[in-house]
Length: 270
Ligand SMILES: *Cc1c(COP(=O)(O)O)cnc(C)c1O
Image 1: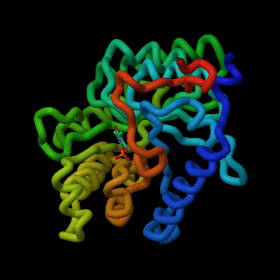
Image 2: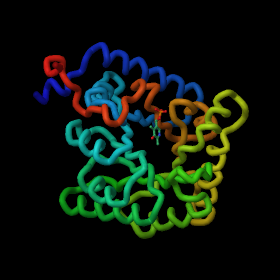
Image 3: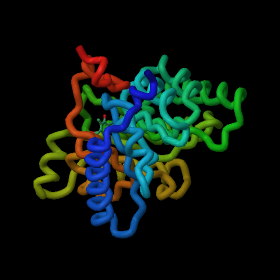
Image 4: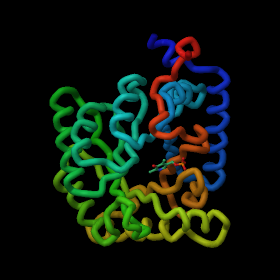
């Protein structure tokens, strides 16, 4: 029964509310009055966890991040339209158009690293605009591979301006909102132990400033999305405008094969 699937356990809701409130406080402490967006990364977590935080009073949480296009689309179909969805995971080009067309409350795609993906998102959003009135453009962040690791997605720092220009000039339904990095785990751990700055965060900031210079606008218009559970405070200290926090809010994630969007209710269990 749909209602049972989306039932919010009071105990769980309380735990989540406590966890996110902790994160808000930690952010506030280091943000020194700057506004920093918190994306609650809900990948592989059930939809009713998201609902619990979105319905929480007095601070309804709006921004949720997902890594898999199919999971995001499924959750968006079940949950209120007032949620702002962020696609933060590696994106396949062929998933871009359907995602942008099917999820009207997709707020931002944080992982754009090729012109082809930008074009596909543009097509999807344009198709959606034909069907319904849209009040805003789809925000996109260009993902930058700041650590130079071969297995990491993201555009090279030196090619970032070109991709940013493409989005600004060729994609009228998209808004270039900023740049994003994941960075190397080793650097994050080093910086977290207090041994100086995280080079990935320095590199993202420098890349952002260069984009502004090359394209001829104030780089401050572009947000920096950097920082996760292990390093969000350090990232904010280095200028992050948006942090993506999963584990600290929702706890450890299940394996992908064990993840369920809808919770199995007690009476369904064998
Ligand atoms: C999963 C994920 C996060 C959240 O990671 P946690 O360590 O659980 O906070 C942030 N950003 C991206 C791109 C992710 O894939």
